[in-house]
Image 1 (cartoon, rainbow, N blue to C red):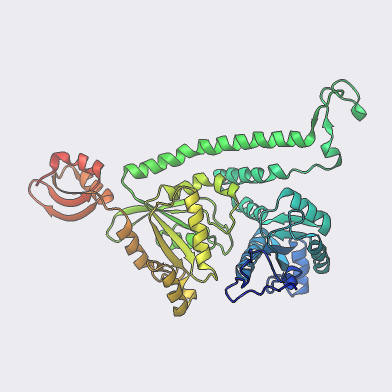
Image 2 (image 1 turned 90 degrees about the vertical axis):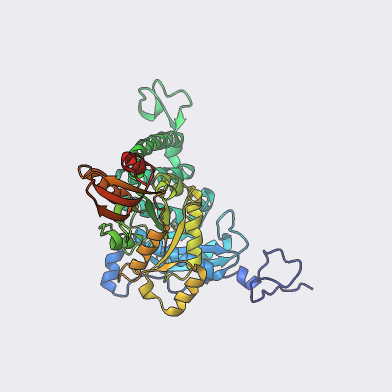
Length: 472
């Protein structure tokens, strides 16, 4: 007699020989519809207008355990699809030990998906993972509409939002890295390419050799373009390095704003520095780095840098392509990790951002967690978030709540100049006094007959410049 395994409240199974991949028959045979994902408008005329320009998509996902996490990931995919310019009609999840290596869902569920696609009138299916080229082709053959994956959607959004020359080059490089293993030839596109002056139907000199298939020619062109883009991105690096060296030479600490996409990083930058950076309620609205100068409450200058946002399962090729941009986090004295206080899964978002930061070699940079949009959450939620990150600061970039406390915390965490000096600076050397106010921290100033007596905290370079005037 076969015993049916029942999961406990914690998601585990009572049987001692459970290997983690058995499921109830009912769950294995069911596609679970995720409610509340459809973004189609009710007004008929508006729907007809949107259908002229928007793709109509159905979302699919596979999970082995953790239904709530899988649903949250699918809802995030719905937001990504909307940002890319699509209208979400339906979302389906299937529980199985691992995705089917052939059609992702399995042959039977793929047929059911085809029926759903036909019923809702969708023209695209988006999978909540990165599909292998063979999986995408096999699923397309069954459902008879275009099939793409989460990575393709993110790349499309990045392509729409890249504005600077460097940003466009980084996005194109990531797109080509994604496209290369997914080239697919059809009919004559797989035919041999002949050389020389070839007449009709392949006649003439140069047509007798094996030639080169068009798909191989495409691959070679992509490799050449990728090499050129890498050279261009490398050539842009010295300009950033020079700017960074100037800040370092002047003893100006740097603070990098990192965090999940749409957490309000650009809004926070604008609130603190009035930078005028683009703010939009959309995922990955900001791709290009913005650097602005500001001061601590005690007058010490530092720079604030807005960086690209992160998301679950951020494509590896994007992390690689934007590594030069993310260097700002690696070189920073402090990382402001901005988190949306109202998100349903703050712990998951924090873990995702920290994982990407570690990938770019910035795991050792001091971090300050900032829960933004605090005006949208109640006291109970704040207590939960405080338990998650006890040292975090709660702010609202929209209302200004908590901004003063945040600035004070940044001032306390930034490194102080390493030398305390007392110098009597002649009145004709006002440039040195100005330098102390700009780069150091002036503790006391007294005007004497011989000059200006200043007690200050300074760095190595400033101390060397003041060496002739040091006293005490």
